Structure formats: C-alpha cells, structure tokens
Length: 239
Length: 239
DNA sequence: GAGCGTTCTGAACACTGTTCGTTTACTGAG
DNA sequence: CTCAGTAAACGAACAGTGTTCAGAACGCTC
Image 1 (cartoon, rainbow over the protein chains, first blue to last red):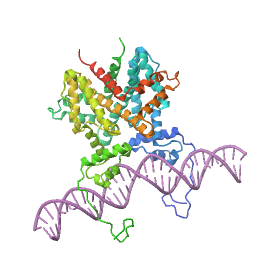
Image 2 (cartoon, chains in turn green, cyan, brown, yellow; image 1 turned 90 degrees about the vertical axis):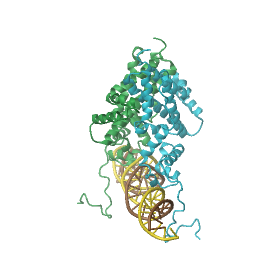
Image 3 (cartoon, helix red, strand yellow; image 1 turned 120 degrees about the vertical axis):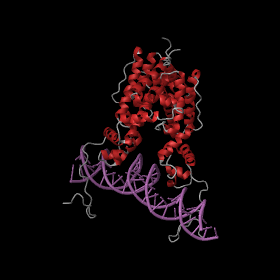
C-alpha cells in the first residue's frame, strides 16, 4: 500500500482519524501532561501546543477543558497543595508547626522544575485554597500572636518560602544552561569568583564567600525560617 | 503629483526613507522607551516590537544595542538601583538603616507598573550591583551579627521586599483588569467576601477580615520589616 | 439505522523574539 | 565636491506563541 515516507497524493482524501483516544480528556490528564512538559522543557518551554502534543491531541481540544493557559497554571498550582495537611493548632508547638508548613511547601515546590516561578504570581486566596490559609491563621492565633501580626504572618511565611525556592531554582536553572560540570563544581567556581573580588572594595563579600555558597540550601532555608519565627515570637504578649 | 491615499504602483520603487532619526539609538533611550511601554501596557504588553514602535524604529534596530529581551529586562532592573545610596554602617542604627534600604527598594519598585515582576527572576549578583550587596553586608556585620546570619540576612530582606511588592502590585493589576470602581471599593468588596465566608469553617479568616484588608500596605510592609529585623536582632551576641 | 450532542480537529488570526541580507545615511579622504 | 568606507536602521522572514471557530468524527440513545 502507501509507503510511510511518501507524501499523500492530492486526489487521495486524507486518512480518517486512525484511532480516537479512548480515554477522554480531563483536567486531570491535562495537568499531568503539563507537568511532564514542565519537567522536560522548563517554564519557558511550557506551551499549550507542547502539552497537547504530549497528549497526542490538537491544541484546541485543550480549550474545551481549560479556559486558557492561566487556568492551566492555576490548576498546576493547586495540584501543589494536594495531600497537604496542616495539623490542628498546638499552642505549645506553633513554631515547629509553622516551620513544618514551610518545609513541606518548599519540598513540594522543588518537586517540579520551575514550579516556584508558577507559584509566584498566583493569588492564594482562591476558594479551594482558603482552608490552608485558614489553618495557618489558626496556628498563629492559637499561639497567642496579636491579630495584626497574624494578618501578615501568613504572607511572610509564604513569601519567604516562595522567594527562597525561586532564587534557589533559578541558580539551578542557570546551572542547567551552562550545561557542563557538576553542581558542586559550579558552587566552587562561584566561591572563587567571590574570593577573587578586589578585597578593599568588597571586604565583606570576600570574607563571607564561603558562607554564602558553602552552606547547603537546606541549612540556609532553615536559618531564615528561624529568623522569621523568632521575630514573630517577639510579639507574644508575655512569656 | 502622487496623491496621498493612492496605492504605490508596482513599477515605482518605494520612497526613500524620508528622515533619519537625528538622535542615535542608545541603550539609555531603549530602556527609557521600555519603561514607557511598561507603564502603559504592563509586563505582558512589553514586547520588543512595542518598544521599537515607541522609538519609531524597526524592531531589528534594537538588537544592535541590546542582545535581546533578557538583557533589556536586566537593564531595566539596573535602572532601578540608579541613584540609590546606602549609608555607611552605623552599628547603633543598623535596624533603621536596613529598614530604610527596604523601604527605598519598595518605593523604587512601585514607581513602575509590574516592576516587581521584572525584579523577581533577576539575579542580583551581577557585577554592577555588587556594591549594593556589599554595603548591605557591611551594615549587618558592623551591627555584630554572626557571619552565618549575615550570609542570609541580605537575601531575606531582598526577598521580602520583592515578594511583598510583587503581591501588592498583583492586586493592583487584578484591580486594573476589573476596571470599574475605586481601589477602596475593591478593598471593601474583598472584605465583604472574607466576612461572608461560612464562619464555622473559616472562623479565623472571618475574624481577621478587616485586618487583612483594612490596614494599609505601608503599615503591613513596615510590620513585616520589623518582624524580620527583630528576628535578626535575636542573633546579636549579647545585649 | 437515524439522529443528536460531545468531543476533537484543522486552519486561521494576531501576536511574540530573533536573525539576516539589503539599503540607507553619515563621515573622512582625496 | 566627489567618492569610498563604515556604521546604523530597515524590512522581510522564520519559528514559535495563545486563542478562536466552523466543521468533521465519534459514542450514545431512540
């Protein structure tokens, strides 16, 4: 019959669709595919067309299940929270509870490439995410923090979590672009760069070169968390 | 001769360029134009073509002075710092100095629409920005903070500044989309939304509705700043 | 088997960032 | 005052983007 690499002659009507996807398209499947594309091509490579290709489906088919790219991104953002479960407020342990919330958030953000970039730029007050906000507020209030502090504490924790992870993953991305060498090697080069700065103009950077680079991200994240929590704790009415 | 509204006949060679732009294109002028476009059309409307149109110049002309959109964005980011001047470290006044740094940063970020979105996603360790980082580190070290804290303190302040302003400007942007009504009206509606939540499922959100919305952004920013600074101060060796 | 909604397709629109060969304008030398 | 040389801007093109819409193919019920 017709050979695979030959063009279709104009008189021959194009083949009918050979086999319909048995599995119907759903938001779930679209989001799944989007994550595959995200992990493979990064945020800049995440296009509706790529997602459609991943599902072996026409681009326009997506728009029947998703209002547009914005909604798709938001659905991916929501997926981030799935399975998260904040504990009931324990006034004696609020600091650890808050930290655990942030740690968990960072872990989730790091699960997918460039996820932090998607997370930033999303407004977390969408109805389906309110329960999480609510519970975080509950923890702060149970701890006895003044309401005006509680009202900003949630924002601070989320912002720190997102911001830290974004910066972190941007380095990773830049490293990926550079391509060659291991992660440690890059860190080494960076440290060397800092140390090679003119010491009289940049005495502090030179002095801190190793600390700014050598400490693991986990440690730095934890320290920042502790700083915020201490700051919050300073607003407790009394000891 | 030829009438203005008539099409040019095919045999007639198109007119020569009527008048060259006297002022030569420079990075400066391109960045200027980019800010005009940014303020008018927002980040999503900021395209090379729009910038070129603003300068009444072909798109491709831009690429002689700027390697691409990435560099343009980075140049805009640098412009943000122009004229900024960190004071010499004063150990007795480090808290206020740090706060002032953050306040100034936020003010600059708010000067242009969507500027926070550009700022996020920029790596501040580019050579021309190192002096600022250096000076910030100097303030922290002079204050007597342990080096491992200093190594993350700068990041925390910048992240908070960027993150807060980003969130802030995203609300502004969303409000702009909605179009109608004043800013206060939107805040009112939002408060009403919070308050109308089922109180047994969202007791804390309902209780804090006014505080999360009513307090001005300036106040919230200041409070968050104080929280971080207090957290940092808790690492001072001794009183 | 006919009809009917869904669901998906394919083509199109109006954009995007970027590249490249060509044309233009300006400058300095003879 | 002419003429080359050089730098700058042009215009068209490429490959890609998000989104829309008429129509075709499908599974299902009658």
